[in-house]
Amino acid sequence: MSFARFEVDKFNGEIYFGLWRIKMKALLVHQGISEALNADDLNNINDEKTKKDTESKAHSAIILSLGDEVLREVLHEETGAALWDKLASIYLKKSLANKLYLKKKLYTLRMEETNELRKHLDEFNRIILEMSNIGVKIDEKDHGIILLSSLPKSYEYFVDTILYGKDTLTMVEFKAALNCKEIQKKLEEKGETSGERLLS
Picture 1 (spheres, rainbow, N blue to C red):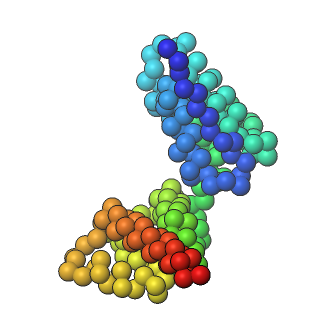
Picture 2 (spheres, rainbow, N blue to C red; picture 1 turned 90 degrees about the vertical axis):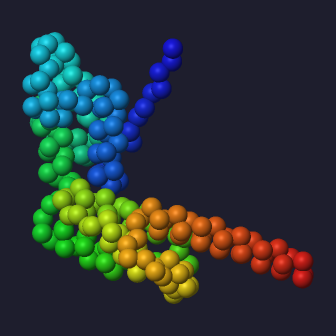
Picture 3 (cartoon, rainbow, N blue to C red; picture 1 turned 60 degrees about the vertical axis):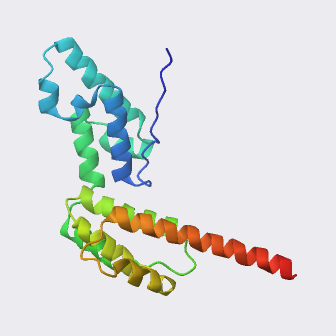
C-alpha cells in the first residue's frame, strides 16, 4: 500500500500567511499530530510517549516549513503550540489599522475592463480570507453585492439581470451565474475571431 506524500511551500514572509497556515494545519492533521498546536488538546493525550512524539514531530514539521528569515524570528520557541502562536502574532496583524485597511481594500476593490475575472475573484477571496483570519466577519449575504459592485461597466446588464426579482443573493448562486457569463463571453470572442478569419 502506497501513501501520498504531501508538502507545504516554505513560508518566507512574502507569500500570504493565512493560506499557508491553513495548508500547514491540514498537513499536521493528515500526519495525525495537529493536537500539538493546542496545549489543551495535547494534554488530553494520556500516553506520555505519544504526547512527546506528537509534540516533537509537529514542532519539527513547522520548522521545516519555514524559510530561514522567518525561522530566525521564532527559533527560540520550543513547542509546536508556542511556535504556531508566535507566527500568528507576527504575521496575523489584528490591529485596528489593519482591520480598517482591509475593509477599505474590500469596499474600493474594482475590476478593470482588461482584467481577467478569475484573477479578480481570487483577489476578492484573498481579502475576505485575510479579514476572517483577523476576526473581521462580513455577512455572506453582502459578499455577492460587494463583488457585483466591483465589476466594470461591461457587466452592467448582467448585474441588473441577476439582481432582478431577488431579495438575497448567495455567493454560490452569484459565482455560478458569473462563470456562465464568462464562458458565454469567451465563446462570443472566439466566434468573433473565427468570423474575422473568414472575412479575411
